[in-house]
Image (cartoon, rainbow, N blue to C red; front, side, top):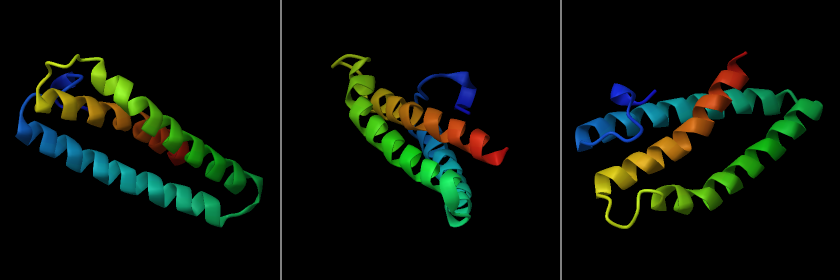
Amino acid sequence: MLLNDQAHPQTWPELAVESWMLGAEMGMVIWLRSIRMMSGGKPAEREAERMVSEKLSAAMTLWPALMAGGFDQSAEETTGRALAHYGRPVRANRRRLSR
């Protein structure tokens, strides 16, 4: 849910709002995952494995995602790319866990 449907917000106020929104969505995902894991059993085990693999994958693919804009991009563009990079899996997890 990026502002103005842009891949990368251009101003610091837009980035601040995007950061806040991503943080709120991450909190929701943590809460939903916690509920699933507290229920125990195979679903909890699968969720824990999925969480770890997603975090490793996101960390390993961040640098290439940031560099896709080249070395001459602004700090705002780099920040927007990082927010978009982490935002996609967070939103997907929120949708999946909310069902």
